[in-house]
Length: 307
Image (cartoon, rainbow, N blue to C red; front, side, top):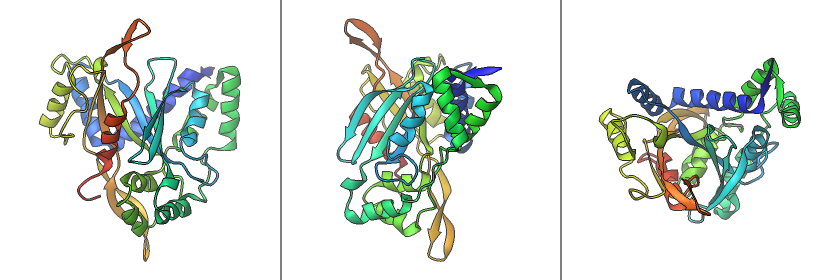
C-alpha cells in the first residue's frame, strides 16, 4: 500500500496539531467547546518563526520551513514586511483548500544591535540538521513519484514532526532576558526554535449556531474562562478579522550560571480568524491573504507582563 503526497501532508499537519493542543490548553478547550456544540474545528493557518542568519546545518530563515513545504505541495503566495519589528514573512498555500495556510516569518538579525546579533549568532551557529538522510531520500521520491510506501510514509512523518522544535542547544538565560528588551520575537525564537507558534481557528467553517461570528466566539471563550486578547483586529465586515487567546506559559530549558535550569516563558496562543469576500478580477472570493498591521499586533501575543 502506498500513500500519496496529500495524505502524507495531512498526516504531518495532524501530528503537529496534536502536539500543539497537548501543550496549549486554551486551544484544547476551544476544540471541546466546538465539538460539544456539534460544530467543526477547521484551522485557517499555522504560523512559525525563524532567524534569518547562519543556522549551522539548517537552512536559514524562512528557507528552514520552505524547503520542507516544497515537497508537500505548498507554494509561496504572499510576502509581508514589518519594518518596526525587523521581520519579513511569506505565506504559503496548498492547492487543496482543505489544508491550512502556513505563515512563516523571519527576524532580520543583521538589523538588530550588534550585541543582539552576537547573542543569536553564537547560539545558533552550530545548529544540527534534524532531518535524516533517509527522510530526504523519501522526500525526493515523493516529489518525483507522488507517493511512497505506507510504512516509509509513517516513518517520514515521525521524522519531519520532530523537526518542529528548538534545534539548537538551550540558550543562556541572561542572553534571553537581555535580548527580550529589544525583540521579544528573538527571545521566543531562541527558546522555541522551529516549534509551531500558533494555529488559527477558521470561524467561517465553525458551524456553531450560537457563535455566528468572531465576536460571539470570543465572548463564549472568555465566558468559559479562557483569557483573551482585549480587542479584535479588523473592522466588522472587513476582509480579515482576527483575535486570539493569551499565550500559555511553559517551563523552558536554559543555561544558567551554574548549569542547566528552567525559566517560565510564553509558548503559543490560539488565534481566531474570520474572512470575508473580496472581488478579484471580477470574481467574488474569500480573502485568503494577511494584513500587515493586524499581523504586527498579533506577533505581540507572546509578550506578557513578565516577559
